[in-house]
Image (cartoon, rainbow, N blue to C red; front, side, top):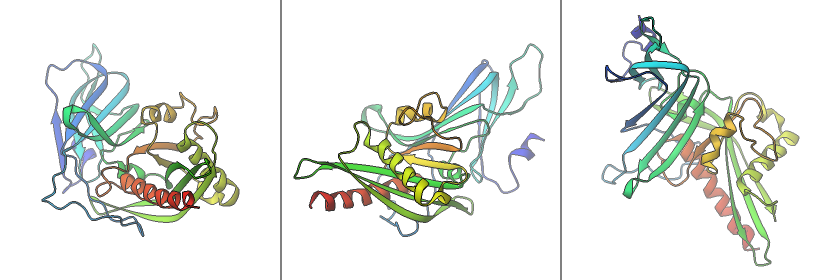
Length: 294
């Protein structure tokens, strides 16, 4: 009965069983190795070809951390590789022996990374999910939003000693094609140039500038659920999404807006979030060079 709820005929499923003597816990953390995905070009932003098989790539890992409202006993983790959905099977901890069921996390955190020399992690991307079954692929999560914004800011000092900040925003809607491919249709690109920006994190200032501009000039792009991809403040993003820490100028993130982290350094030929961030970084760098040369 449970199996029929988790997969359809033909779905590819990875099953991880837990030791029979595992104890009860309110938090379950699982690390999966060999994460793979396929990516189609962001329209108009094809930046480089995927690595050839002869090029060495560090093995990707995904760390999935699930939190529950009460203690549970985990028996089996099922990752549907076709739909990207993750299901934990087990039972609620109780003196009464309960039947196994599909356990629904109250919160989930997913981080994809590779290991550098010395064991240090290079974070490719991360997202924080509210109540519900998480997804193993960040691109699948982005598909659930009405619009996805990727925003990046680069800064430099010109010959007159002015600090110039160039913010590039690309936004659009993701679409899943087949079992493993994703495609992003970009609506528009916006660049904001700021001279001597306010003190503080220029990346956050740039995000605020973009949304202020759209609010006044194109509010239709701010309708529905919004995902913002950024490459700054990785350690603070979870608190922003949980609204336990203010995002900008003592304001929490608006309802319906969530922050995702992605780096532009790696993963741009594998994951949509990383490809968009690389595109934003490239466009900001080009425009900044033009501004500094004036």
